[in-house]
Image (cartoon, rainbow, N blue to C red):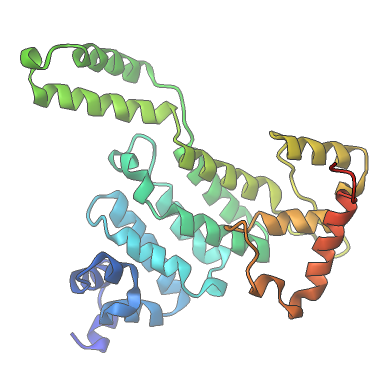
Length: 292
Protein backbone atom coordinates (compact mmCIF):
# COMPACT_ATOMS: atom_id res chain seq x y z
CA UNK A 1 0.00 0.00 0.00
CA UNK A 2 1.22 3.52 -0.81
CA UNK A 3 2.15 6.01 1.89
CA UNK A 4 -0.89 8.09 0.97
CA UNK A 5 -3.10 5.04 1.34
CA UNK A 6 -1.64 4.29 4.77
CA UNK A 7 -2.37 7.85 5.90
CA UNK A 8 -6.05 7.29 5.05
CA UNK A 9 -6.40 4.15 7.18
CA UNK A 10 -8.22 4.28 10.51
CA UNK A 11 -6.10 4.19 13.67
CA UNK A 12 -6.95 0.53 14.27
CA UNK A 13 -6.19 -0.50 10.68
CA UNK A 14 -2.90 1.42 10.69
CA UNK A 15 -1.79 -0.36 13.87
CA UNK A 16 -2.78 -3.73 12.45
CA UNK A 17 -0.97 -2.96 9.17
CA UNK A 18 2.27 -2.39 11.09
CA UNK A 19 1.86 -5.54 13.16
CA UNK A 20 1.08 -7.69 10.11
CA UNK A 21 4.17 -6.43 8.28
CA UNK A 22 6.51 -6.80 11.27
CA UNK A 23 7.78 -10.39 11.32
CA UNK A 24 9.52 -10.41 14.73
CA UNK A 25 8.86 -9.04 18.22
CA UNK A 26 11.79 -6.66 17.77
CA UNK A 27 10.23 -5.33 14.55
CA UNK A 28 6.85 -4.87 16.24
CA UNK A 29 8.51 -2.88 19.01
CA UNK A 30 10.16 -0.51 16.53
CA UNK A 31 7.86 1.57 14.35
CA UNK A 32 10.65 2.37 11.91
CA UNK A 33 10.71 -1.19 10.60
CA UNK A 34 7.53 -0.96 8.47
CA UNK A 35 5.92 1.63 6.20
CA UNK A 36 2.83 1.72 8.45
CA UNK A 37 5.00 2.23 11.52
CA UNK A 38 6.87 5.10 9.89
CA UNK A 39 3.58 6.75 8.98
CA UNK A 40 2.54 6.58 12.66
CA UNK A 41 5.72 8.42 13.60
CA UNK A 42 5.20 11.02 10.86
CA UNK A 43 1.59 12.00 11.63
CA UNK A 44 0.85 14.99 13.83
CA UNK A 45 1.09 14.76 17.60
CA UNK A 46 -2.68 14.75 18.14
CA UNK A 47 -3.15 11.73 15.91
CA UNK A 48 -0.23 9.94 17.58
CA UNK A 49 -2.09 10.40 20.87
CA UNK A 50 -5.16 8.81 19.32
CA UNK A 51 -3.08 5.94 17.97
CA UNK A 52 -1.52 5.30 21.40
CA UNK A 53 -4.97 5.30 23.01
CA UNK A 54 -6.28 2.90 20.34
CA UNK A 55 -3.30 0.58 20.85
CA UNK A 56 -4.04 0.40 24.57
CA UNK A 57 -7.75 -0.16 23.91
CA UNK A 58 -7.02 -3.01 21.49
CA UNK A 59 -4.76 -4.64 24.08
CA UNK A 60 -7.41 -4.40 26.80
CA UNK A 61 -10.11 -5.74 24.49
CA UNK A 62 -7.81 -8.67 23.55
CA UNK A 63 -8.23 -7.78 19.88
CA UNK A 64 -4.45 -7.46 19.50
CA UNK A 65 -2.04 -8.22 22.33
CA UNK A 66 0.82 -6.77 20.27
CA UNK A 67 -0.98 -3.43 19.97
CA UNK A 68 0.46 -2.56 23.37
CA UNK A 69 3.91 -2.58 21.77
CA UNK A 70 2.76 0.08 19.32
CA UNK A 71 1.39 2.24 22.16
CA UNK A 72 4.67 1.82 24.04
CA UNK A 73 6.74 2.89 21.02
CA UNK A 74 4.54 5.94 20.41
CA UNK A 75 4.80 7.02 24.05
CA UNK A 76 8.60 6.82 23.92
CA UNK A 77 8.81 8.81 20.67
CA UNK A 78 8.82 12.63 20.48
CA UNK A 79 8.65 13.01 24.26
CA UNK A 80 8.48 16.79 24.27
CA UNK A 81 5.31 16.74 22.14
CA UNK A 82 3.41 14.75 24.75
CA UNK A 83 1.37 17.38 26.53
CA UNK A 84 -1.03 16.67 29.37
CA UNK A 85 -3.94 17.54 27.06
CA UNK A 86 -2.85 14.85 24.59
CA UNK A 87 -2.21 12.34 27.34
CA UNK A 88 -5.76 12.61 28.70
CA UNK A 89 -7.21 10.27 26.07
CA UNK A 90 -4.37 7.77 26.56
CA UNK A 91 -4.87 7.71 30.33
CA UNK A 92 -8.63 7.36 29.87
CA UNK A 93 -8.00 4.34 27.65
CA UNK A 94 -5.65 2.83 30.27
CA UNK A 95 -8.33 3.31 32.95
CA UNK A 96 -10.53 0.81 31.08
CA UNK A 97 -8.27 -1.95 32.42
CA UNK A 98 -9.68 -2.70 35.88
CA UNK A 99 -8.76 -5.37 38.39
CA UNK A 100 -11.81 -7.38 37.31
CA UNK A 101 -10.81 -7.29 33.62
CA UNK A 102 -9.82 -10.59 32.06
CA UNK A 103 -6.65 -8.96 30.74
CA UNK A 104 -5.55 -7.75 34.18
CA UNK A 105 -3.84 -11.08 34.75
CA UNK A 106 -1.39 -10.02 32.02
CA UNK A 107 -0.62 -6.69 33.64
CA UNK A 108 3.11 -7.28 33.26
CA UNK A 109 2.71 -6.92 29.48
CA UNK A 110 0.61 -3.75 29.72
CA UNK A 111 2.56 -0.63 28.54
CA UNK A 112 2.17 1.17 31.86
CA UNK A 113 5.87 1.95 32.32
CA UNK A 114 6.30 4.25 29.29
CA UNK A 115 2.90 5.78 30.07
CA UNK A 116 3.63 6.73 33.68
CA UNK A 117 7.11 7.99 32.73
CA UNK A 118 5.64 10.20 29.99
CA UNK A 119 3.00 11.44 32.44
CA UNK A 120 5.63 12.41 35.03
CA UNK A 121 7.68 14.31 32.45
CA UNK A 122 4.66 16.16 31.04
CA UNK A 123 3.34 17.15 34.48
CA UNK A 124 6.78 18.34 35.52
CA UNK A 125 6.80 20.66 32.49
CA UNK A 126 3.19 21.89 32.64
CA UNK A 127 1.71 21.19 36.05
CA UNK A 128 -1.51 19.32 36.66
CA UNK A 129 -4.69 20.57 34.97
CA UNK A 130 -8.13 19.66 36.40
CA UNK A 131 -8.96 17.49 33.35
CA UNK A 132 -5.70 15.59 33.59
CA UNK A 133 -6.05 15.16 37.35
CA UNK A 134 -9.48 13.61 36.80
CA UNK A 135 -8.11 11.18 34.21
CA UNK A 136 -5.23 10.16 36.50
CA UNK A 137 -7.58 9.65 39.44
CA UNK A 138 -9.74 7.39 37.28
CA UNK A 139 -6.71 5.30 36.27
CA UNK A 140 -5.53 5.05 39.87
CA UNK A 141 -9.00 3.99 41.00
CA UNK A 142 -9.16 1.32 38.27
CA UNK A 143 -6.00 -0.44 39.47
CA UNK A 144 -6.44 0.03 43.22
CA UNK A 145 -6.98 -3.23 45.14
CA UNK A 146 -10.28 -3.59 46.97
CA UNK A 147 -12.21 -6.03 49.13
CA UNK A 148 -14.30 -8.65 47.36
CA UNK A 149 -18.02 -8.07 47.02
CA UNK A 150 -20.37 -10.55 48.77
CA UNK A 151 -21.02 -12.22 45.42
CA UNK A 152 -17.28 -12.51 44.73
CA UNK A 153 -16.73 -13.92 48.24
CA UNK A 154 -19.31 -16.62 47.57
CA UNK A 155 -17.69 -17.39 44.22
CA UNK A 156 -14.29 -17.58 45.90
CA UNK A 157 -15.58 -20.00 48.53
CA UNK A 158 -17.10 -22.25 45.87
CA UNK A 159 -14.02 -22.48 43.66
CA UNK A 160 -11.80 -22.88 46.72
CA UNK A 161 -13.88 -25.90 47.70
CA UNK A 162 -13.53 -27.34 44.18
CA UNK A 163 -9.76 -26.76 44.19
CA UNK A 164 -9.32 -29.11 47.16
CA UNK A 165 -10.97 -32.06 45.39
CA UNK A 166 -9.17 -34.89 43.62
CA UNK A 167 -8.53 -34.26 39.93
CA UNK A 168 -9.69 -37.81 39.16
CA UNK A 169 -13.06 -36.98 40.72
CA UNK A 170 -13.82 -33.53 39.26
CA UNK A 171 -11.64 -33.65 36.14
CA UNK A 172 -8.79 -31.35 35.14
CA UNK A 173 -10.87 -28.85 33.07
CA UNK A 174 -13.06 -28.01 36.10
CA UNK A 175 -10.10 -27.94 38.48
CA UNK A 176 -8.06 -25.73 36.12
CA UNK A 177 -10.94 -23.28 35.80
CA UNK A 178 -11.26 -23.14 39.60
CA UNK A 179 -7.56 -22.32 39.99
CA UNK A 180 -7.85 -19.56 37.37
CA UNK A 181 -10.85 -18.07 39.16
CA UNK A 182 -9.02 -18.12 42.50
CA UNK A 183 -6.08 -16.30 40.94
CA UNK A 184 -8.37 -13.71 39.34
CA UNK A 185 -10.21 -12.99 42.58
CA UNK A 186 -6.99 -12.81 44.59
CA UNK A 187 -5.62 -10.22 42.16
CA UNK A 188 -8.60 -7.98 42.93
CA UNK A 189 -7.59 -7.57 46.57
CA UNK A 190 -3.83 -8.31 46.55
CA UNK A 191 -1.65 -6.12 44.28
CA UNK A 192 1.64 -7.40 42.93
CA UNK A 193 4.87 -5.46 43.41
CA UNK A 194 4.78 -3.72 40.02
CA UNK A 195 1.16 -2.72 40.56
CA UNK A 196 2.00 -1.21 43.96
CA UNK A 197 4.88 0.73 42.40
CA UNK A 198 2.60 2.15 39.71
CA UNK A 199 -0.04 3.13 42.27
CA UNK A 200 2.63 4.92 44.32
CA UNK A 201 3.94 6.78 41.26
CA UNK A 202 0.42 7.88 40.37
CA UNK A 203 -0.14 9.01 43.95
CA UNK A 204 3.05 11.06 43.84
CA UNK A 205 2.00 12.73 40.60
CA UNK A 206 -1.42 13.56 42.03
CA UNK A 207 -0.04 14.77 45.36
CA UNK A 208 3.31 16.28 44.50
CA UNK A 209 3.35 18.18 41.25
CA UNK A 210 1.86 21.58 41.89
CA UNK A 211 3.54 23.98 39.46
CA UNK A 212 4.19 27.15 41.50
CA UNK A 213 2.84 30.51 40.36
CA UNK A 214 5.19 33.42 39.90
CA UNK A 215 6.82 34.26 43.22
CA UNK A 216 5.59 31.08 44.94
CA UNK A 217 7.94 28.45 46.33
CA UNK A 218 7.95 24.93 44.84
CA UNK A 219 6.62 22.35 47.31
CA UNK A 220 6.96 18.58 47.08
CA UNK A 221 5.03 15.94 49.02
CA UNK A 222 7.26 13.81 51.24
CA UNK A 223 6.47 10.11 51.54
CA UNK A 224 7.36 9.43 55.17
CA UNK A 225 6.98 5.65 54.92
CA UNK A 226 10.70 4.83 55.16
CA UNK A 227 13.72 5.99 57.16
CA UNK A 228 14.84 8.58 54.61
CA UNK A 229 11.33 10.02 54.20
CA UNK A 230 10.83 10.19 57.96
CA UNK A 231 14.11 12.10 58.35
CA UNK A 232 13.31 14.55 55.57
CA UNK A 233 9.74 15.12 56.80
CA UNK A 234 11.02 15.81 60.33
CA UNK A 235 13.53 18.34 59.02
CA UNK A 236 10.85 20.05 56.91
CA UNK A 237 8.54 20.19 59.93
CA UNK A 238 11.06 22.13 61.99
CA UNK A 239 12.01 24.43 59.10
CA UNK A 240 15.42 22.84 58.55
CA UNK A 241 17.55 22.62 55.40
CA UNK A 242 15.19 20.12 53.75
CA UNK A 243 12.48 22.80 53.77
CA UNK A 244 14.47 24.92 51.32
CA UNK A 245 13.78 25.36 47.58
CA UNK A 246 16.97 23.53 46.58
CA UNK A 247 15.76 20.37 48.31
CA UNK A 248 12.34 20.65 46.65
CA UNK A 249 14.03 20.91 43.24
CA UNK A 250 16.29 17.96 44.02
CA UNK A 251 13.43 15.73 45.15
CA UNK A 252 11.19 16.62 42.21
CA UNK A 253 14.06 15.93 39.80
CA UNK A 254 14.84 12.59 41.48
CA UNK A 255 11.23 11.43 41.13
CA UNK A 256 11.46 11.67 37.33
CA UNK A 257 14.47 9.35 37.13
CA UNK A 258 14.32 5.71 36.04
CA UNK A 259 17.96 4.87 36.74
CA UNK A 260 20.20 4.97 39.78
CA UNK A 261 23.12 6.16 37.62
CA UNK A 262 23.24 9.79 36.37
CA UNK A 263 23.29 10.16 32.58
CA UNK A 264 25.97 12.19 30.82
CA UNK A 265 23.33 14.55 29.42
CA UNK A 266 21.79 15.14 32.83
CA UNK A 267 25.11 16.29 34.33
CA UNK A 268 26.59 18.10 31.33
CA UNK A 269 28.10 21.59 31.40
CA UNK A 270 24.99 23.43 30.05
CA UNK A 271 23.10 22.35 33.18
CA UNK A 272 25.79 23.38 35.61
CA UNK A 273 23.51 25.72 37.57
CA UNK A 274 20.98 22.95 38.19
CA UNK A 275 23.79 20.57 39.03
CA UNK A 276 25.29 22.98 41.55
CA UNK A 277 21.87 23.51 43.11
CA UNK A 278 21.42 19.76 43.64
CA UNK A 279 24.93 19.37 44.99
CA UNK A 280 24.32 22.25 47.39
CA UNK A 281 21.04 20.76 48.57
CA UNK A 282 22.65 17.39 49.25
CA UNK A 283 25.72 18.82 51.00
CA UNK A 284 23.58 21.12 53.15
CA UNK A 285 21.23 18.30 54.15
CA UNK A 286 24.04 15.84 54.82
CA UNK A 287 27.11 17.76 56.04
CA UNK A 288 30.40 15.88 56.13
CA UNK A 289 30.51 13.76 59.27
CA UNK A 290 26.75 13.82 59.86
CA UNK A 291 26.26 10.30 58.49
CA UNK A 292 29.14 8.63 60.34
